[in-house]
Length: 391
Image (cartoon, rainbow, N blue to C red; front, side, top):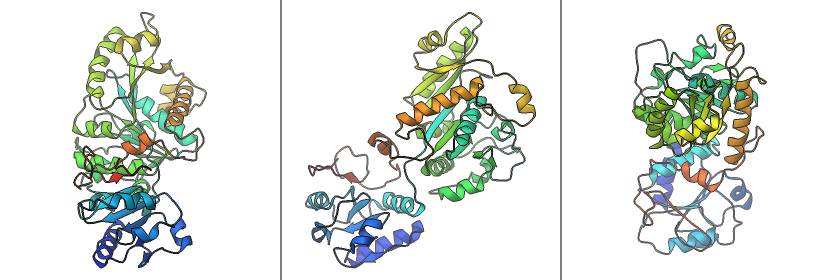
């Protein structure tokens, strides 16, 4: 809903809605009808009518929109209105376009995004990534599995879905800007109740960073769980994927040489992802425990994985890793997802709940082009607290 009497602002906001694929409800006067005010997915209020809106009920999803960066009184009007953000046009058009598009798509809190890497070659990172995705989908969560390793052989093969119809990475290499999250998911191959983005059998080995940013941003917008299978060598595409991850799992065999290799991978990943945890595969030839391996890497221990009976035969028959809920992989994935989702504020059931403020801050769009509204705000629209101070 748009509430304003400023003709120039109306024109600008209607253009933004058209670009985002949203159908606006325009109210040229204040206050708007109570039922519409409370039911709209997003409310854009012009500063010209803000003072007449003080009596409306408080609700989330209200953005105060102006054009005068020198208007110091806008913050007090925003507090009185209960606005979540204050934006100034045209500076913040990219940010506001994404916010309107999110409202049109019905996007909620972003997905829990887990990056999985191997500490050395053959550590089993792809196997664990597939098992996590299969487990999340089996538990009724919306799940997307993304293969960011062009030399990994293809996660669709590991899932037994190499013949599944849908787009692969080369088909999405030209993606830019914003991709509709639902349309993206519907275009991907579906295997074992999850959407999988992998590589084709062609010779393309790189994807532009902008395409990775666009596709992963869309994959995360609809909530649930997104699992990323990353290469050990952190190229530009993998670095972008790490930037969008919430936490990482480094799969480390319990061997001395594997620990040495894993330390180098952990150092590279740690520059881009603060929450990296070790998954130790046993048994260790020297008898090292998982705690000792993780301590040697200076990483928290996410858990230990024993051998998976029948895994090789399962893969040959098209049965994916994690398909056995009571096997070592299945038990680990269930326990890990339960803890990780609870820590992210998602609980343990399939229904998504609101995240904490730290998650909302991480999900803030990095494409906003506006000037700073407060010092050190990184160019994002200003937030408001109850004291009237720009956050």
